[in-house]
Image 1: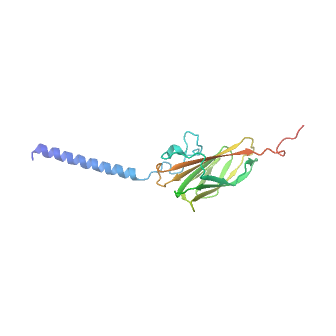
Image 2 (image 1 turned 135 degrees about the vertical axis):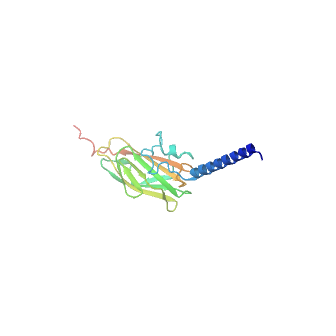
Length: 193
C-alpha cells in the first residue's frame, strides 16, 4: 500500500472513531432524564390561559381542559372574609402512577398540610412526584380567604399526569377551574338608613 493511501486510510479510521464516540456521547446525554424544573414547576403555571402554563413545558400530549379526572372537596360555593377551607384535591391517575400538581387562587393564602407540598401566598404546588393509591392521588392543604371578599375567587388546578421520566415527553396536563362567590347575606350588608 502506498504511503499516501495508508495516510488517507488512517485519517478516515481516526475520524470515524471520533464520530462514533461523539454519537455515543450524544446518545448518553439524550438518554439521561433531565428535569426542566428540578425545584418544581414555576409559580403561576396552573392558569390554563396563561402564556406560560404547565402545558407549555409538558407539550407531548394535548392538555385536558376542565378535566373530569380532577375533583376537590372541603370548600363551599360562598365565601366570607377570613374563611378557611381544608381542600382535598383528588386526581384519578389510571393508568399512570406518578403525578405532580399546582393550584393558584386569585386571592387568599395557602398552607401546606403535607411534606410534598409548598405554599407561596395564593399558590401551592407539589415539590415531589408521588405515586397514588388505588388509582387516586390526594393532596391536602388549607386555603384562607382574605380579610375582604367582594369579588368572585377563581382557583386554577393543574395536574401533570406523568410517566415519571423527568422530561416533557409522555406527560399530559389536566386543568380544572373553580370559582367561589362572596357570601352576601343580610348580616354582611350595611344597615338601611
